[in-house]
Image (cartoon, rainbow, N blue to C red; front, side):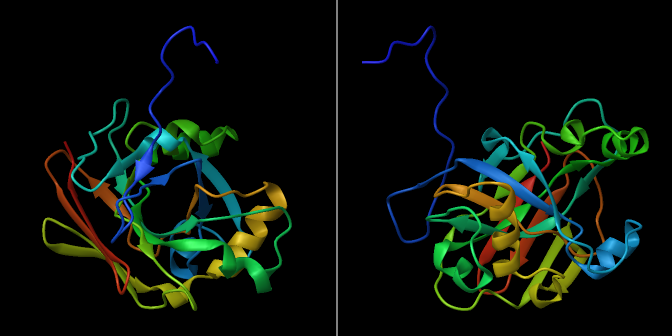
Length: 226
């Protein structure tokens, strides 16, 4: 029996709709600039190869767990995203087989310390301090899914005012392509979550803001910035 110097951290989990069993999170991968209009507002060209960054599993905040306004920032941004939850994985997965590895989808928000991210970009440094902080990955329950991925409306409102609104079919790289590309860089596995990018309209949040995200057919996510 393995002996630990101190108790190991608890397993991060996400609820699954209609099931008592929960989804154990292995890791979180995120796609940058995967909607053309958002890519343009952030200063990029159309359909460049997708790029990825990561968040730690314990960045997850489930429905009912309000993320705290993080330290060392004055410019916290919301980014609403479709999240893929994998039930299996592998390396070099063909696009034609990618959808078979999906357990379901969730509504996620990629919270971003925009000032720290921009400073890191200017210096050619990693984005970890801007993207991978505590509570930076709010998520709804996972909705089990088979067949064609969601294509409908994705939107987020802050204090009742819509800030981002688009449709999933506006993604530059679709769900199957994202999985296939990620599997070229990592060996994917059950328990992996992939945040698939955000549409245009990202903007600031302050303490006390009430945030409501929704993806047609997938679900809703609400939280207050603590």
